[in-house]
Image (cartoon, rainbow, N blue to C red; front, side, top):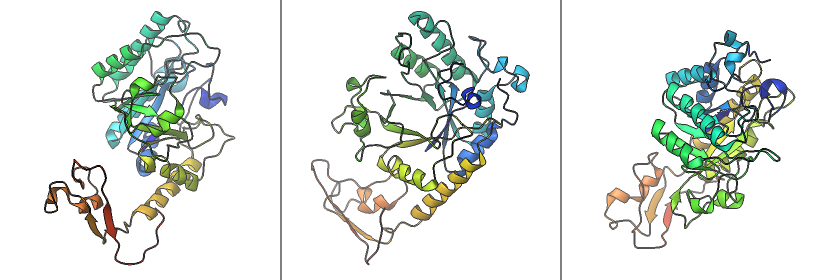
Length: 351
């Protein structure tokens, strides 16, 4: 699971797609990191710039950034503070840089705007240490200026500056959008996928939700959803219940996807107490459900074991181990197999 952090002018103007006076008096990115870690999330992704064009770092390419705000007397850098806090807590950091920029005059001038975007991407990927994920989309907005995004050039730049970063978009190259903003994957969701059948901003949602059992590319899906009705914090909105988050968890992480849960900081610059309460309840639900594996004392057998029944390297009992380095493997030249689990007694379960 990863925690999405939508924060910016929209937090203060009660909008989700702002057209771009901000002073979060208590902003504390260490609190964001602490909340994520306590709730069981291993990654944070920050909206370094959303569609309104406001930059949460002092970009040299625009005056529309934290350096023009009263926060920290114009010397603040949200990205730097979060990067430092995440590193100290051993939490992975990802960044979202929106291609659509409703503030900059150059938007709509293809070459100039693509160069502008790459300049800002370079700032983000060279100033803040190890970035584990770069998150972007093809958003333009209905009736917006016509723009061609040079995605392949952007991806090459990211590979050059942060070779270990996962690149997310609607269609990969490394992870893909699930096709909705409800956090729900297809009941079968394959990590394999055909990128040739997908286009950023134009992929069939049903194809993305299910993946492709005959696909040639490994592009696992991310299920993005917000704990609140909107992506940014609004005083009038309340978070989903822990039971609703559990249902989403089953339909995202439980269906072979990363759950990317947006928990937006409020206008004070902190994650709200009511959101923290829900996250703690969600954590306790997961703990109570998954702390006791009812199959632990069961007897296991398989219709096929790679290398024959005497080969312990691929024993069926490895399915009970919490490790990706050991696993049951059937013979490679067979097209179907069965795994038998004898619980030894009558047991009631629903997961």
